[in-house]
Image (cartoon, rainbow, N blue to C red; front, side, top):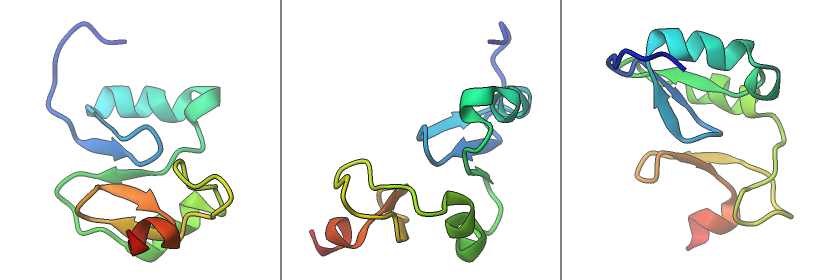
Length: 85
């Protein structure tokens, strides 16, 4: 990680973490996180693009359900079961 604190510019949906520009680049270059969907903070969110990046990943809470929606209140990708609650 970088020693200097910088303002967050990106948000990783899977990690639910904000990253500065430099850390975001490293996050996409790291093998284990290279396929994570990131959004640019302060930019309009293209929901269809985000969902296509997520693919058919399972919900972190309901493992048998696929991620289908993005909850703006939770700032997380959720399934339909999460939405019903």
